[in-house]
Length: 363
Image (cartoon, rainbow, N blue to C red; front, side, top):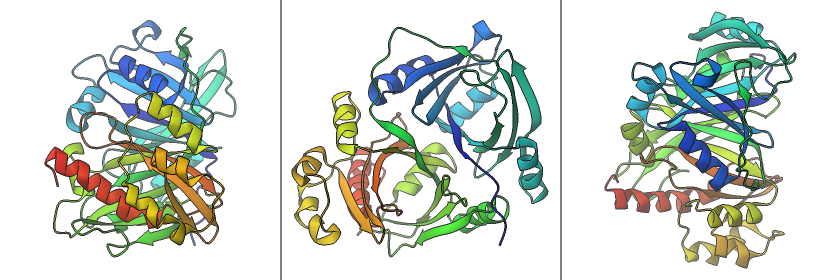
């Protein structure tokens, strides 16, 4: 078995967006992210601007182009708003780069050191599926707000957080027949293990289907489900994503909370749009999941989904796409022991997505 690449956790997730200033306001207002750092014209950048937001252990970077020939502009023109970078916190960025590239990873960025008055950071990077990249971040010797080159961003506007804690998992959508190849990339190059897999019998409705493999590192802090389309009577959500994102890319980030009722309640009040869950879902849910601590009437009112595995149960809910293209969205998840991904909810979830697709005319 390949030894897992030593990864401490998710360092940050970087989105390339059309308007970083406005996107930052949305993530503050809707999800309760806190302002951390900024880089742009005032810090010497000429082709892009970035706003850094944080909630507990989740750090998001929102980056927009300042010039039409910027690589950020090119990426955004093709894919729309979406995740470009899934940065991984490592002890040794040079060693992580050398190890993965020597096993066949495509280089994105050779190791280099950046520094300022707060210390130094070593960065390196490789490509994964599509144009998505992993940047290895070694920040042992740094105590600044984010990275060298960024200044503290301290606006007056600071809405309260909504109880989000850390990135639970990040799902990637890939093309027909590409799932096994990407799973093998994580197995052989990153040393990940396959945690679980789902075929089109597990994840299907009357109309659509998909396949998925979940890859995880040894400390389980990094979990990447990889989805590909499967044959169905109509066009699946994965096909819709690939059509509008123009190729493979991250489909959603799952963010963990210890109190999903409070989190969803606040986010709904702040204007976050969640997928519709029919009332009939709750008629039989206790038959499937058994006794739970939360009040079913409150879960039903907030449309929160419930599932159970051999280790416990989980509560989850999915937003609608958070940009104009029907591509990227978020999942809010609370784990009460469960280590799985809500297999029992797949049918209800996908029927809800199909309903949205039919309204968009893309089913």
